[in-house]
Amino acid sequence: GQDGWEGYLDDSFNSNGDKEIGAIGENGWSWREFSKFVGPAWLVSIAYLDPGNLETDLQSGAQYGYTLGWVLLWSSILGIIVQVLSLRLGIVSRRNLAEMCRDEYPPRLTLLLWVMSEVMIVASDVPEVLGTAFALQILSSGAIDLTGGVLIASCSTMLFLVLSYFGKSPLELFVGFLVAVISACFVLECISSRPDAALSFSGMIRPQVPAGSEGIAMGLLGAVVMPHNLFLQSALVQSRPVRRARNSVEYACLYTSVETCVALLTSFLINLSVMLVASSSFAPHWCERKEMVCHGGSDPCDGDSEGAKCMEVGLQNASALLSRILGSRASVLWGIALLASGQSSTITGTYAGQFVMEGFVRLSCPLWVRNLLSRSLAVLPSLTVVLVAGAEGANDLIVFTSVILAVHLPFALIPLLKFTDSPLKMGNQRNSRHFSNFSWVLAGVVVLADAALVWQTLVMPLLGDGNTPAKVPQLFIVFLCSVCYVALAGYLIWLPVKHPVQLPEDIAEGDDHGGESLETPFLA
Image (cartoon, rainbow, N blue to C red; front, side):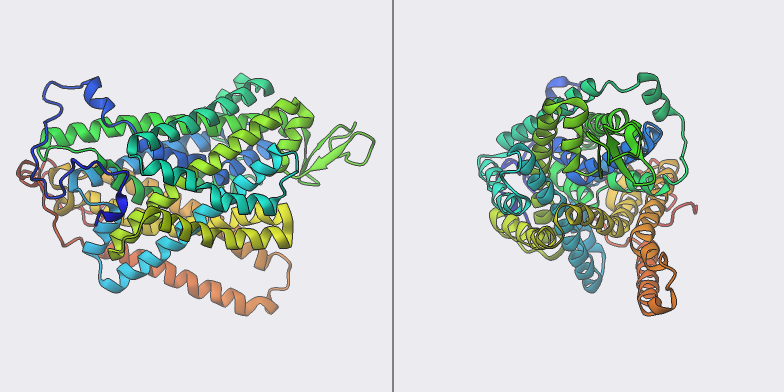
């Protein structure tokens, strides 16, 4: 159903393909045609700049300097690959990922995936709420506390809902403006911090994993591929009408893929700027013993002498640290960028939630209702944690939400790979044998990285204090959940794709890949 997509989908798009739509790509590449496809990928790229990602960038740069730049680079390349798979699925089949799951899977499994996806979308909204609250506190010099910031964040998203009702162009322009603001702020921060160019380049091209950095590296890798983005882009690309003919479909995929590459490379440069700022400004003052940044004393870990101070690295403290090290302007720039990040990321969460709800269970509601529901569910834990544990608890909550996203990722990534491998869903536009195997290997790397993140965040604390016998019940529950989790993921991999979608004749007929089945990866 498309009833809840008002304000974004193009009215000229006919879901039955009956309307005559002009062909594209008849004369090869055209910049004029390409311009018509610009927009959706920038909405998707915003999710790569959410406060949770910025938190990971800060931690990696502060603790390990320039050494993990290569992880961020390859994570971004992987993000581009899976987003291209998502957009190809939407353009070729004219079905988004959630609709595909509903069509293909049994009702109970569909319902389970829907519930898990809704939890994932609420979890993705929590860092946006807290990031906005931190930004308001920074920009108001503490006049707005975290509690007030969370309450303001709960209402501020109505701005984008107003824009959405004026159509897709104002909304896409607004998102482009926010990306420009974030870019400008972090580029200025990066210039002010004067990172070492040689070390920056070396960190991106030379793989190295310093002792103790495994957890941060896994966090960088797992944080880039956001599961709700896979549902989102497969739906957003359908806002551009495309004639149902092979050449037009292929050029639509090409134009949208190029736009996606540009948008996600921009996101990569912004994340890299944050990492470089932390590497040049925080890493020289990092105290391993205290796990803090200490500045102003004669000793790197001296936080007690006059003029010295030790602070933990986080979204809130980053502002104060930048102010001490680089000056007050750096603090203001950080606050503006964080505010733009929190507000823009809300847009992707709301649309992803709408597409997931309509796709899985055919429920539709106005965007403002959807936004109010998601934001309310995100505000409740955010407000509770801020009231009970303050800023430190808020940073911990952001880490916990990243774990929830990591847990859900296989249940979006596996169906995407299965569907784009299947000739029943994609015809002769399905993945080639080599690209399919490459994609499954990369997906396996990301899933393993996310599993390591979950292990480090949830399981290691249970084992860390040496009182293991007393925690046998908790460990048994973790073991049982792990078995069910692996079994469900394995079932999705094993489950064959059976239900075809309606494809144009020149896409459905003729198999460019030799006719072999790709139902199971690595098997001919």
